[in-house]
Image 1 (tube, rainbow, N blue to C red):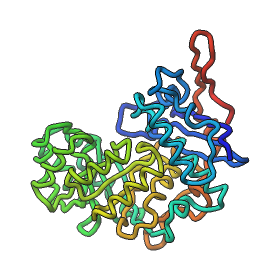
Image 2: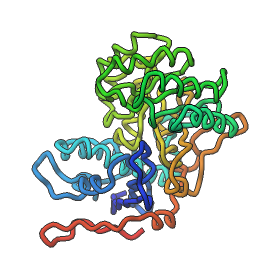
Image 3: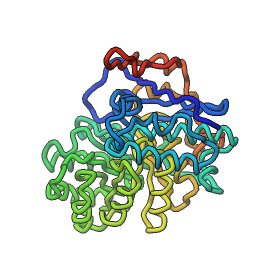
Length: 392
C-alpha cells in the first residue's frame, strides 16, 4: 500500500485554561493508504506541529515531515520503522517537534495497518496474550486538602483501587501544605489502595526541595513519586532515589525518543518508566522501551491524560507484559476528549482493563465530534497556501 494522504486536524475547546490539562486541545491525524484509514493523536502544540509537517525545507537536516511520509509504502511494521528512521534523518534539526508530530502519524499508521491485516496492534507487535491491567484514576490535586480527599473518595466509589494525584497546588506552597494533600489523598482512598503522587517537574533542578516531600510520601506509603524534578535531570533522579528506597521514583513521559527513556532506566534509579506514545514517537518506540524495561526489571507504565483513543494507543505497547500490570486511566479530560471516540475501554467486573480485540487501535474516532471542535487553519507564505484545514 502507498500512503496517499496524511491530514492533520487541530481541535480545541472554546476556552482553554492555564492548567496542567492537555485535554483542552489536540492534534489528530488521519492517514489513508490502500483503501484503508487510520487515526492517531500527537501530544504537541497543534499549530507548531502542523508547521513541522508542512513548512518548507530549511536545509538538508530540516525537512518538513511530509517529505518523509507521503507516498511511502506501508505493508508491515518494518515499513513503519523505516519511515520513522527517514523522518529522524531528514528532520534532524527540528527533531523534538518532529518526534512529537510524527507520534500522531505513527500511531495512525499502526491503526491503519491493523485494520488492513484485521489484527489488533498488540498482535502486530508480536504479543500472544492481552494481559489485564489495573487502571489507576489519574486526577489533579484539589485546591485544598479537603477537595483532594473528596476526589479520592469519589474515585473509590466508582471502582478504582489505585489513584494518582498530580500538579495543581503541589510544590507551589510549603512542605506542610504538600504533606496535608498527600495525607488527605491517602485518607480518602483508604489504607489498602495504591496511591501515586505526580510532582509534574515542579521542583525543576532543586533536588533538595523535592526530597523534603519524601517523609510524607513514605508515611502515606505511596507506590511512586513521579517526576519530582526536570525530566532530563537524570543525575538528580538518581540522587533522590537513594534517599529512601521505599519511595520509588517514576518518570519518562518527557522522553521524546526511546533513547532518553532508556537512559532514565539505566541511570536515573527509577522503579517505573512511564511513556506517552503521543510524545515519544509513537507505538514502535514505546514498545522498544517496554521491552528494554522488562529486561532490566523495571515496571513499564503507560502515560495518558486525554482521550480513549490515546489510552488505547498507550496500552498496546505493553499489552502482553504480565509483570507490568498497572495502567494510567484518564478521569478528568475536558469534553473534547470525552466525546472524541465512539468506544471506551471500560473496567470489567474485576476492576481491570485491557486493550480492545478489534483491528488497529480498537477505538474509533467520531468525525462529527472532530467537526465540532475543528479549528480552521491556513498557512500562507509569499502568497502561496502551504496548508489549509482538510475536509473531515
